[in-house]
Image (tube, rainbow, N blue to C red):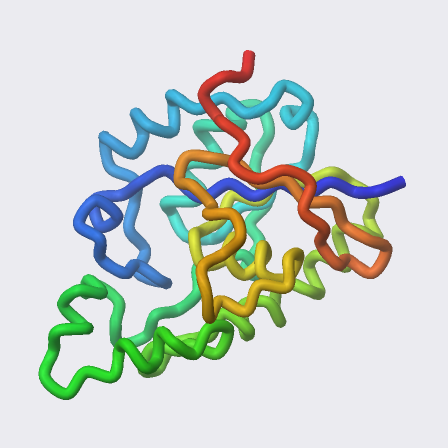
Length: 199
């Protein structure tokens, strides 16, 4: 029996609105983010699934709002990618800084790494043991996580190297569904599932 794994990015924070890189900086949702999360409804069939949340508060708050009857288990493997020294800054600011190497770093795709940060490939390396465990345990699971993590998961499933635009853009406020093979390898099932149309 195949195991299904859905991933949902947390609801927006003030730093998201300001286009600041958050990474491991522990920013909460705030009033507007909680309103957005409360407007989302997951597919009815997912409400019986196990829920895993990133340890960061913005993900934990989103999980509690979306799944009020299913306490989320905290899973460190789906914490946001660290952006190191770049956290708190916008990409526009970083690209425009004197002597900036932001463009050349971004062009590295899966091996992009902010100074003192983490790469998408390293995110994949911490995701793979989790996905294998989920497959072995045989329980359909929802992950409440972050943008860089869902991009890394999509790249694993699709073979995207992140050096070009993805075949399908992962939209905010959507869920993405994968099937896990016996070894935990993810396969794309459905992307950009609307969270506002399910009863």
